Image (cartoon, rainbow, N blue to C red; front, side):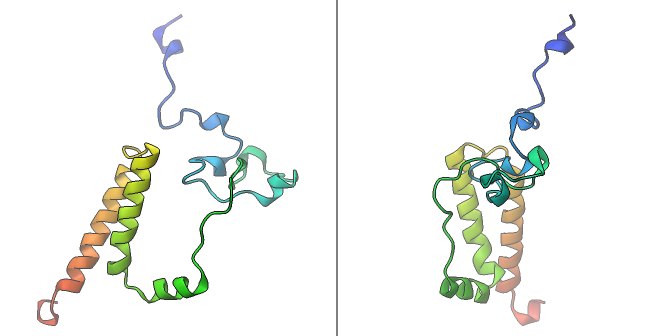
Length: 125
């Protein structure tokens, strides 16, 4: 037996084959919403299903209509820093900060780009 036969699986794919469905990846923090068909025992897609096949305790928090309307009125320059702060906090709390580093860099870049665009005066544009 060679050492290649005993090599550990790639960290990026480790455990993926053990998931009940593709949509379950990142459960419970960043998985897709629960599969309504799986909950009824009727999901025909099995492991290829794009929705989560794992238990979800309680319902995820949702914005009410008034808050959704307020959020729609906000500029991306206002919203992106909040999203970045929340994403960074959740990644740190769940221990996936290194895995989410690229997403956080993109959010940070977008946030800074939008902020600098709103700070510029009309003469600078």
